Length: 155
Image (cartoon, rainbow, N blue to C red; front, side):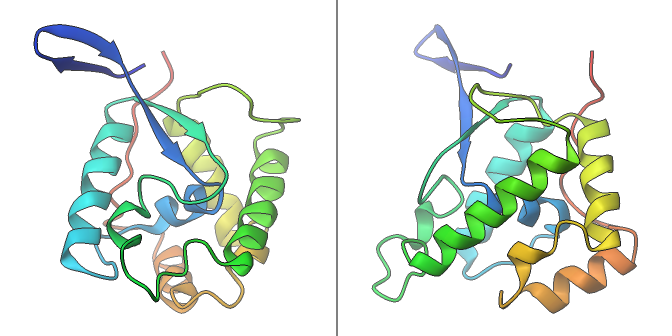
């Protein structure tokens, strides 16, 4: 679990993610909608690489945050909620879980298992219609080289 410092007080923190962002993280190379979005995404990935926990949320999450003031933001659209449902079902199947109800660490072996499933097409239903789908497909074909998410092995 990640530890943060705030005025000398140690606090436990968790990254809040909507389910389909678990898939987006697999192929994240440092590209995004805006410079602020990319900067925020980099902070989130850094926290996850340090072993901070993930809390699954419904609706906009920490990755969405820089986009939420944009009137054309898609983060609250029903199509994105459907994408979240599809992604969660696929991730649960891949990781052999019945549910995710508690904060968890996305460890290195989990990422490897998810990336293999992503390459095989087993996690891709949620990606259909996404504007990043072709880029993510190319990244998967390139064995995820250069991707930023590189969490620690399980302890």
